[in-house]
Length: 110
Image (cartoon, rainbow, N blue to C red; front, side):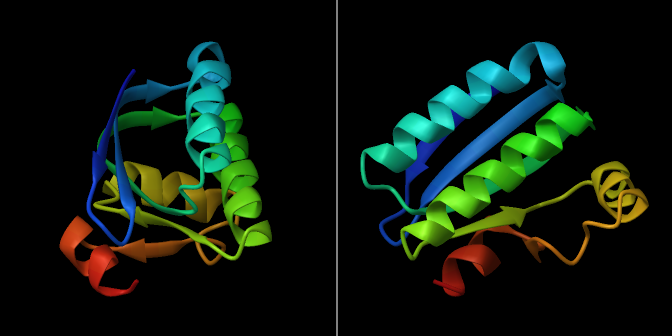
């Protein structure tokens, strides 16, 4: 799993790549938490290259979304692969997240 952060002005774009499983969710959550605690409360998770999302990975997304909402920010998903959409639908969470087709579409929403 790799994580790359880009500053796009209105929001930080966090590009995730690989498998977000139990082994990596703690380190990803720690990095995202540090980003939020440093004042970055508008986040776009660009996940087009995420191959697998475990329940631990979903928990990270939910926890981070709650943290930014508590600070009047937003966390949205962009470029979500069909396999990840299917996982979110299976666990009945597809309506919990704002999902955009692209980073540009997500940025326009801020």
